[in-house]
Image (cartoon, rainbow, N blue to C red; front, side, top):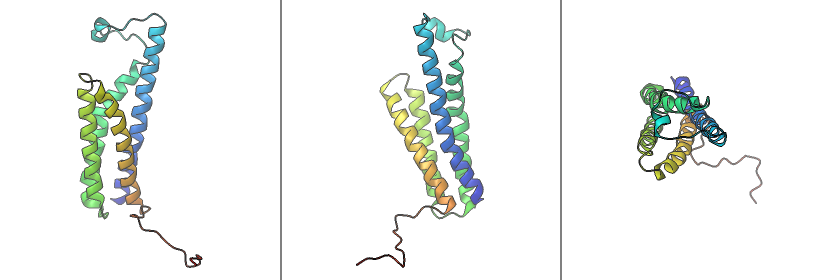
Length: 155
């Protein structure tokens, strides 16, 4: 279960990278489409026509962000109860909380664009907490302790 915990936590960190890449792909594609004469208005937004191929990035970002990432975070929390990792449940709960905040920021960001900025910052927090959780399962987290070599010259 320790391995499952570590894999799920690293998958969450990888998902953050995928999310950033997907939305960047979509925005740059949209910008190129507009520079080429495309017009983005309500009619285009509500139509079933795909105005530019990079719109797939928005679709990937939406599906990952509202389905895949929350599911992985929930699985991480469930696995944490069986993994017997000191602090594992706490970090899995923190990751899930950060994911909930991320989803809410994404949902409400359309009405208040400043939330979009927080959505980006929170993504970095999610990446960090997922990596911390994964490293905790790897046994590579030092918990803030400093190790001194027996051969270290302290004088």
